[in-house]
Amino acid sequence: MQQAILHCLYSRHSDGLVRQRHLEQIASSDEPWVVPFVVQLAGEYVLEILESIQHGLSDLSSKRSAQRLAYGDFIARNPGFFARTERRVVSYWSCYYRWKFPVLGTYPGCHLLELLRATAIDRTGRPWPRHTPPD
Image (cartoon, rainbow, N blue to C red; front, side):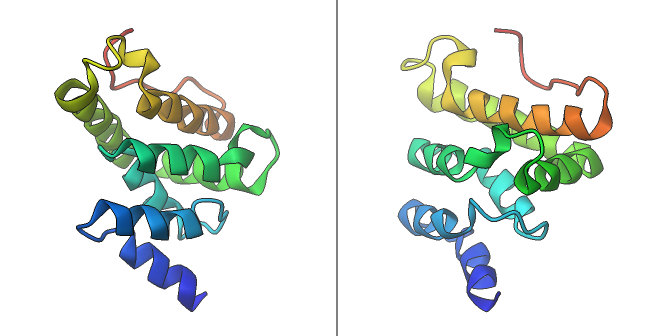
């Protein structure tokens, strides 16, 4: 547990490579206290970090996984935090990646948002608001 706490703290490092290396150690965790550290990094501008999150959240697509439940619970209880993360994804896409991914929906950060949004829908049983522009 101490190592997981250390990895969470280092996921806030100013160096993107350090953030990514420590994120990779916690992304597959389904511990509820790890979830906010991973969700915040979903609003990151470094593509490799977004890819690491998607790789670590491979159980998110499984309807009954502990990981899906943990993320769904967190997002349902923290809608403002998730909305801010969505806005960051759009902002970084617009600033750094619009040329590479001309359609917002093709940007890896948006794919990740859709996975996370689906967990909240599962937990609440209702549509989850979108804070991103339409594709």
